[in-house]
Structure formats: structure tokens, C-alpha cells
Length: 327
Image: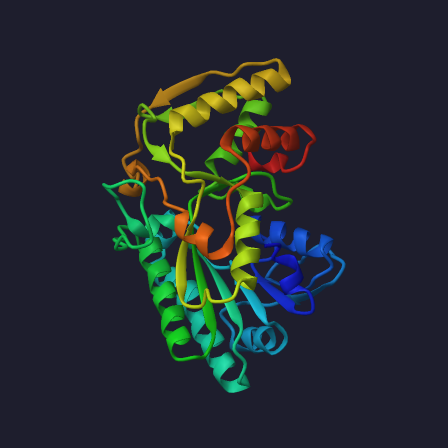
């Protein structure tokens, strides 16, 4: 099913529209002539069909405007750093839960019931032992960041049960790929960082032996997942993994980047090893591969870009000079 026809005639709000994922969703909606309300504290580049709301999501008035005008809300804004959340837990809690309190209040007061697609994270599962991890696995957060994400999921689930809105939670694995936003330099975007370094002929450093499994999913496939979550009926109140369903060690990913960058640039960088820093969070040592069968069955979604293809596209984008600031 093509999700775009289901969104035409509606207004789609994107919180964090200037960010890594938000800007990618906004670009696709612009190309598809879908009305968009872009919400950000930063000034947004003008886009055809987009109304810009420069606002702080921690303020009720922001959500009153969003709920009044949008039938579908992609909620991406908020703290994105595990380490910042640990350092400033009160601020992290406020940036995660207070906006949702305002969202629920606005929906109740305006009598509107928007579809809300929330960007959560696969790290809410914690240090999993059985792979692949399905949505039936009990979340066991081991970071403040993940605990707050799980609180947000529960807050949305309760509002859905009360009939105030219709939430869909997407637990994202390791997202990578080109975006027009400099936010691709965030601490979760390791592939974006090392591709930028390899293209610029900088050697790469990996912690320890790098034999930790990750599940990398290309940004275009994540954008498609959001569109389907925002438009597919009967998904209200459900939680889904968005990933490739394929495990790759960090070392394998680094070696793939080095090989493909060398083919593209003619220069091969080295991979060196270094010990983990003393303040490294245990979540960094996890092994994770997601089961994606539930979302595939429910929405018709499936990942289309494999890791090799996605890295090639990211390298090509870097060489064109887009996103060079991610190094």
C-alpha cells in the first residue's frame, strides 16, 4: 500500500522538523504535495506546502496550535542523547513527558483525536539476551534516556485507551543515511560519522574488538515507516520495531565503510582499536537484532535498502558535499 494517498487532504505536523529524521520526512512530504506543519525552535528552510511554527514543545500553546490544525502528528522532538539525559535527568524528563501532557490536554480541550506517531528507541529493551527481539519482549531500560522514552510510550498508550488520541510507537534501531540536517552528527549516528571521516581520509577508531551486534536501518526506510504508521488504519495503541532485522557487528560495519569509501575515493583509511572510556554506558556493549515481522504484517512495510546499498548512498552524498558537517 502506498501511504501517501491516505495523507493527502490532511495536515501532517512534524515536531523536530529541523532535525535529522524530521527534515527527511519534511522533504518527502514536500515532494508529494502534502500539507505540513513544521515545528521547531530553529528557523526552517522554506518548503512548498509547509507552514512553519517556531515554538518550544514544552509550551502548551505550541500543542494547541498543532492539534488544532493537524490530523497526523509525527513527534520526533526532544532529547536524543543518552549521556545528556544521564547528566541532566530533570531536563530530559521535562523535554520528554511535558510535551505529551500538553498534547493530551490540547486533544481533550479541542475535542480532536489526532494520529500521533512517536519516535521511540529499540534501546528501551535494554541488554537483551535472546535475538531477534520482538515487541512482546519486556522493556528493561538501563539508561535514564530509555526510561524516559518508555514513560512516554506508556503516557501515549494511556491517552489512546482513554480515546483522546490514537498513538503508534515506533522503536527505531540504528538509523543511518543522508539528510539535509546537521543533526545527523548526533551521538546515535555512528555510521554517518565514520562515513564522513573515511571520505575525508581520516582513520577510524573502534572501541575494543567491535564485536557487538547492531541492527542498521536506512533513513528512507524509516521515513516510509512513519508514513505508513501515520496512515494505516487499525494501528492505534500499538508498538512496533523499525529495523532491518539483520545483525551486523560494529567491526563489520566499519570494514564495509572502509572498503566502499576506498572504492569511491581511491584512498583507504585504517581502523585502529582503543579501550572503552571509563564513563561508557553499558548500553554500548549490547547485542541487538530486531524482529520486524509485526510491522510488516500490519502495514505492508519492509526495509528496501540493505547496509551495503545504504552505505554506498551515504558515501555518494558525502562526496557531493552534502552533510559534510557530520564529521
